[in-house]
Image (cartoon, rainbow, N blue to C red; front, side):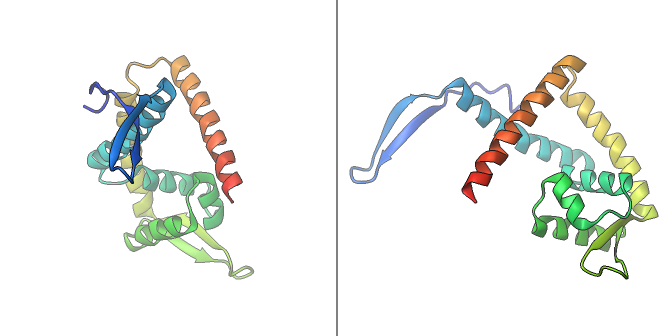
Length: 169
């Protein structure tokens, strides 16, 4: 189990000239938090894919297309914080599987508009049930207030990381 492992994490320094590794200090709670969030993200993806045979991202893509039929590929990409190459790759596979249709409108051929097929609707209905089971299991010991507080905290962190990313551009 991912979260039941006891771990001691330390910051280390590596001196290339002497080939020596030096322990600096034990990691802070903040460092431990970020590392555990990283591990949790990987574990969520892994377990969800095993349970549903589809990635969390693909389920979200199908869901958002269903909620807003005919939205542009670019708008969907922005909503889900996915880069252009990844969204194109996901959508191409879904189109090949017969789950979605991508259309170019006559008046503006630059934009691709997205629609679920009947097979996509059926697949999404099944996946949403699986997603709900997964969410219930993952958040079993959390009250609604705790879920809300955690969502606020994670959203703050996402905003901070986005600001950091903007500074890199």
